[in-house]
Length: 129
Image (cartoon, rainbow, N blue to C red; front, side):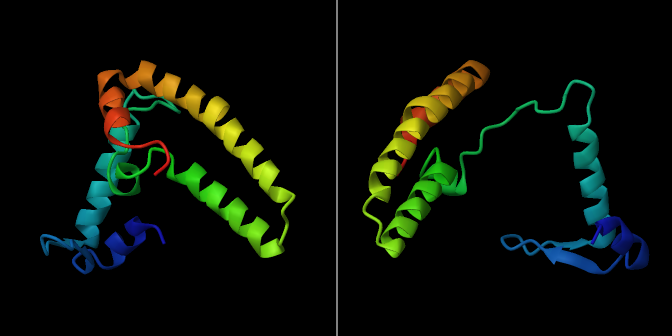
């Protein structure tokens, strides 16, 4: 449900507790934080589809392409589960399309957009695993 509704009904009730710090955030505070973020993202200088950050934490700290990797693993799992050896050449074709067309194109874009920041990330985090 929309946090603004809870902020009106229960402004001082805890919305969540921050795991590391133990900070209690009420629904009123949560609504205020959501509004600040919404206003930041609606700044006139930011337009739809603008990119202003690279995710480098969590799974993206281990693989630059975790979504594509999970797609390949899922495809292989389905092929194995179905007992279809004919699917494996398709898996290789799918991997090649991702590797040489999709990812290569995305990396050129990210290099142009973020420069040294993306180069450093690319040099420290592997493409697949």
